[in-house]
Amino acid sequence: MKIVVSASSFADVVAAMSVADIIELRLDLFSTFPDENKLKGIGKPIIVTIRRKREGGKYSGDEDRRLKTLAKYSVYADYVDLENDVPDEWFKVMRCKIIESYHNFKETPSYEYLKDLVEAKRGDIFKIATMGKDKKDVLTIVRLLCEYDNLVAFLMGEKFAWTRVMALFLGSPFIYCTVSKSVAPGQLEASKVKKILMNL
Image (tube, rainbow, N blue to C red; front, side, top):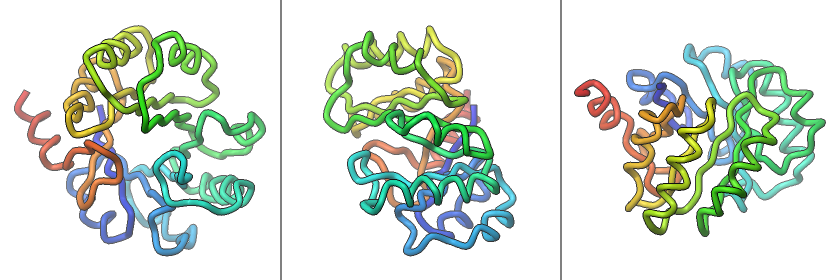
């Protein structure tokens, strides 16, 4: 189980060094896309993400440009995050491992719907982040985590922030945290998560 810190600037990267196992560069939140050589000097495994507006990010430009930029950064990254609706050919051109992600900021779809997404995965890890509303949604996430490996799955929203920690104990390889402002609803502070894990 690894603590992933979502960074929206290089100041976040510096702040994350003492608590993160992996650093996610949320490049859609950076003021400009950095030179690829800056990625080499980070000294921790990195995930490169350019999140579109409809998945809660800030990127609203050309999709082809976004994917070409991710492919360029993939040479220097350990993981690239590609959304589950990205065409197959882009999965083939990435030069590192791939986290295939599904985000839903409105609801948690049925177990059957999410199960089909996981079983059709093309990436190395599948990530599910959906909005939680009730215990039924928790049950859906728990069931998926118990049945599939290499799956990150949790509920968004302050009320369900604890499902991010719970997921670790059900086999999720990563927990996404913050060192500054949260980049997703219910995201936990990395140092608090580290304390929780050390005290178990």
